[in-house]
Image 1 (cartoon, rainbow, N blue to C red):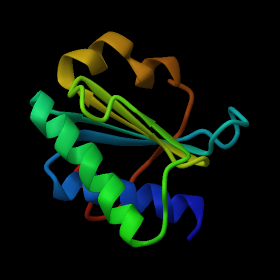
Image 2 (cartoon, helix red, strand yellow; image 1 turned 60 degrees about the vertical axis):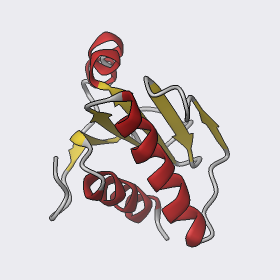
Image 3 (cartoon, rainbow, N blue to C red; image 1 turned 90 degrees about the vertical axis):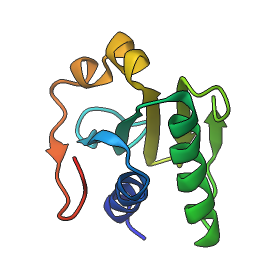
Length: 117
């Protein structure tokens, strides 16, 4: 699975679990620590945890485990680090606070057909 395909799979799982405002940022020309960010929001702390859990479980079924994860149960922000694809699932107010899209404003956005962006 290429990193682009992994980013698409993560975005699809998030979309299937009703994540809001899904963004995929292409960081390949901007940094060496990862290739893509997948950023999305949940409308409640329970939804944030559910989206992160779904991503983890669905990718685990395919033999893909994160190198690390943070905040999976807090409901405010969860990070799943798959090396070349890092996923951030935020509670809406936390996302507004951290503004990752503004921090990486020069990163091209990637759109995938069928993904609720």
